[in-house]
Amino acid sequence: MKNNFILLILFISTSFSMIAQTNPTIYQYKVEDLSGTTFDFASLKGKKILIVNTASKCGYTSQYEQLEAIYKKYKNKNLVIIGFPANNFMWQEPGTNAEIATFCQSKYGVTFPMMAKISVKGNDMHPVYQFLTQKKLNGVLDSKVDWNFQKYLINEKGQLEQVYKSGVKPNDEKIISWIEK
Image (cartoon, rainbow, N blue to C red):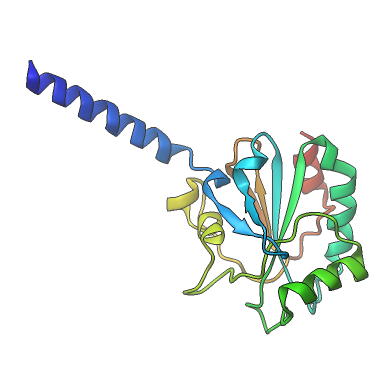
């Protein structure tokens, strides 16, 4: 009887562990924003999230304008856009967090949440980007960040759904369709 009870406990704990690994979410992460305040992804439960790695001296930097327009249009309809400045591609984001905040506000009027500068690839890749790029962590697909302004789409359950390369504009029909569905 005691052995059966132990086996039952092991079965239940293994089952819960497998369920937790089957549907990994971004809600387990906390990051720092440009002002140094902790941002908890768990606060976004029930919302769609578009995550984008940004840079202020890139050929795609003008995408900030479209990102901001989409954010203004859909922020009250369950969408959050989150920018992660990164200096991983040809040193196109050399600024400090304060300089990045000033640039985003003065040049593009950015009001969507901008996080502190991180690394989106390599040995010092931030844990959020490890989640976004590794199937063993996100449960969906492996990807790599090829350049600035790559977009990751997270559904209302906190699960990765899709990745779009830099050349896909934020207002592309595929992204807008995902937001509106």
